[in-house]
Length: 105
Image (tube, rainbow, N blue to C red; front, side):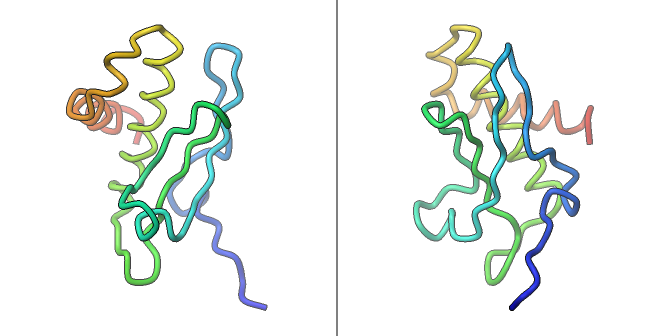
């Protein structure tokens, strides 16, 4: 049986974050980009962030994966704060994610 990769340790990303009293799970999905073209996805209904790691033919840097994590967390923050229109502004969310990544990683 192949050994399962611990992406949480590799990328220094938690398995769960707590925001405004909500537990948000973080799940690495090795075929996320292949299935839908995304490298990250914030699923509000399931309270889960899905992230495409750098694996197989889909190469990503550690910084890219960490920035994706920040990006998806920001989607949840904006939604919980009631800024629903900003959750759809991908350029705005990405710019904030890049800044937050510089601070915390």
